[in-house]
Length: 309
Image 1 (tube, rainbow, N blue to C red):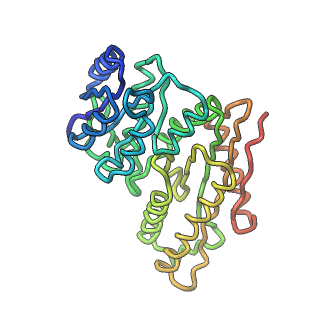
Image 2: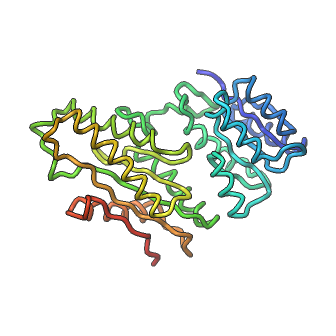
Image 3: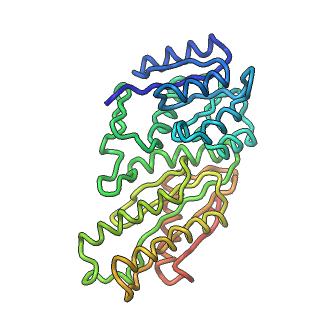
């Protein structure tokens, strides 16, 4: 276990000092950078676990810094949170498109920053062993021990944040639930150990097809959830088909040519509505579409846009 080192990038020395001191109170180490090129140099030479990145820098802007970080294998896995006074939906969308995992607006609200820092650190591929202040990111209360994905508790907490952000910044958000079609599930063919292998394979397929800021979780015994920010319904359907096509090959290899087992998928997308649904509402509606998919929907897939009350 080791301390987490956060690079705070901001050309305002006073604001940088305040944020660094606040992060120290929560047990984080910090490294300050006041220009974009200085930030890139630090991230390439030091063991940085997260970047809090201002957009308006004196040499190259934060977007260019993020693009360079994500294009360099040495720094591509470092989560980036944009911290800026800009707050338009276009700014937010551009940041996500470049690979940022989150967006926090100025002026700084330290408790809110800490919440976003903790969530962003969980997106790291090498999160195992990270220790930050009172928080242990390998805490099993947030992790499914079989698949290594997040669990239902983590999903509910993060989904609420994502629905509120999608509503605030007016971008689409899609939620998917995947499960085996019970009509094709032959327990005499699939032993318990074999089922565990299948669940791990689904988790791997999800990871391989997802972006760094997508939220993946094992929702129930055989159900998996994926929350896709900035994703409209057609793209969410394409994502589901990609997962299912990959799993078709896996199922053939594990069960054999007689395999009739398929993945069913329910999808609900929120499109910049006038009201942000709660996490409970969105998951309930997604579960209904999954029920329809498993009940005989074409190609075992049911998808729709969330209907506002």
